[in-house]
Image 1 (cartoon, rainbow, N blue to C red):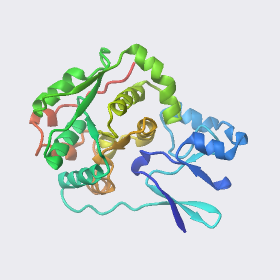
Image 2 (tube, rainbow, N blue to C red; image 1 turned 120 degrees about the vertical axis):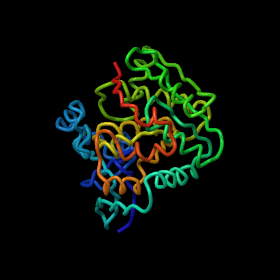
Image 3 (spheres, helix red, strand yellow; image 1 turned 90 degrees about the vertical axis):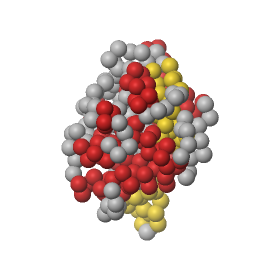
Length: 297
């Protein structure tokens, strides 16, 4: 069998297939163009799953187009397409060292990157690890919407202060920006959206790309890996949106060695294992701060 595509962990970078037609492509648009107009029949079950926030990781909004399952590879066996899941590696070493190695390897492919800092633990740990790995000052970016109950700017700047970061590039976006960017966000992720949070990621990534960066380093995936949050209703959407801006999306939490460690050690809603590992690098008030959900209006 010939390997065609190596699928991304937790489906972060979607890839689409039509096994019956022997076709595949990195975007729905490209796959449907290959299949022709007859393939545009809607899958009502897949459509409803997205609006219910419960996509199954296989269906799309179109009957003939399926997602390559997360963590699976796509092979060509003669004239047939076949998907095979990969086994997670057995963890070797501490969680912190695994995250550090994952980050170090991912940065080899990034010529010019920025770290997206938010008000939580995950991105703060990524920033601290990046500084440790590179040994130099890192460009830090954040999005400020100024929307009450949603904007994290105040906490983000406090986290930067705790980490000794002197400068944060604040990207401003208002309500009108979120609304006007919605069509592009939907075109980028190629799924229905049940709230505007992914649009914020688009605005951030688009501006980072405009500023000349080629990669965006984030804390995405930590909740899914260590708190067992469902990755299917978030990670593929964010990954596709960032990819549509021309950026490479990087996160050490989605390295398969880290996934293997989490599988062996278990998960919990408080991400205790991750917090314990982070305590070696971050101030206690940041490590043990409770997560505050912020839903986009």
